[in-house]
Length: 189
Image (cartoon, rainbow, N blue to C red; front, side, top):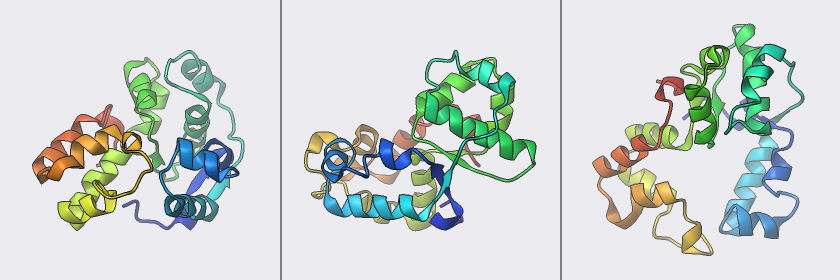
């Protein structure tokens, strides 16, 4: 969906730790539902390049640090994005943290808004694009709703459950996913 391979992608250097990749039992308990998913996650993270420290833009930091919803990881990603943006380098920032996107959108931080404008993807935006390419039925199968994909049904993502659960029709799925995409001006067209 991003028109690249994992080798073209970067993750924060802290990603293996925040995902508990060094502790499979904890990762399975807190993040995933089965060993197969753990293996795929490890392979994906290992295939990506690791981001080191970003060049700091003090003006951007001063604007972002007081915002509720902008945590260390998103702050680092935004600094890296600013570095690329200032060099006119093409990039896409992917995040699952919609509180971060909403915080920027609702702020007066025009620099961050310009950096992120039409350069962000989130799970829901990628799923909508995937449905457009591969079809609703195929993506529903890939999402795995109704299969034994988690050790506990309560771990299944709430939005995915609402979007794909109980044999949902394509329009329902699309409407649901679209309802969970804040700050749409940041999302890639």
